[in-house]
Length: 216
Image 1 (cartoon, rainbow, N blue to C red):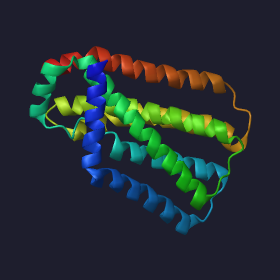
Image 2 (image 1 turned 135 degrees about the vertical axis):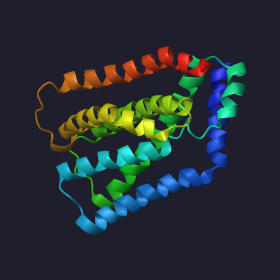
Image 3 (image 1 turned 30 degrees about the horizontal axis):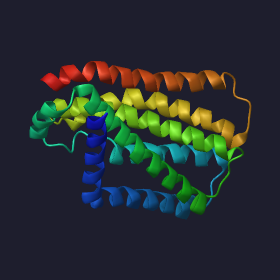
Image 4 (image 1 turned 180 degrees about the vertical axis):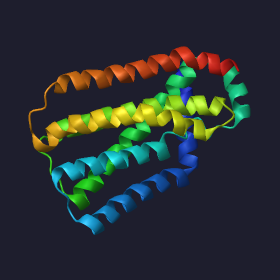
């Protein structure tokens, strides 16, 4: 546990020292929401929902997907002497999820200020947003780990990410419709369970497979 906490603190310290990355993501979110506002004003509820999840996708790519790629390859040899691979991966995931939670809440606030608040069930939508942050963070952290161990091949992350992220976004947008329009959606709870199971599957697969990448 002490190793896990130390690795998480190290990532937050690195993020704080490289403030340009964090503020660059904030600038991207603010500029995106402002451009949408200038072009569309305050869109209707379903369009608002679609735009929000598209924004979340690009926020996760810019803030989370770099978690492993920003590490110098030589550092992995040093980390190898300090922690086991499962602890290292889980620390990265925890850091990525924490950052994504903050970015998602900031995005939600900016959407509220500029694009209105067309939600029928605000609490449910916030819960779905945080769940979506967890899902996107887990997927992109795992893909970042694979890309980093494959000679820093960022293109590999894009190739693997599309088939994994697309169903996650489709499930999230459909779950959010219940909070947006307050309409009956058949098998809504089944979709929620599928999403949570997918999150658990990605984390478990990461813990199982990452040690083999770690040894290379």
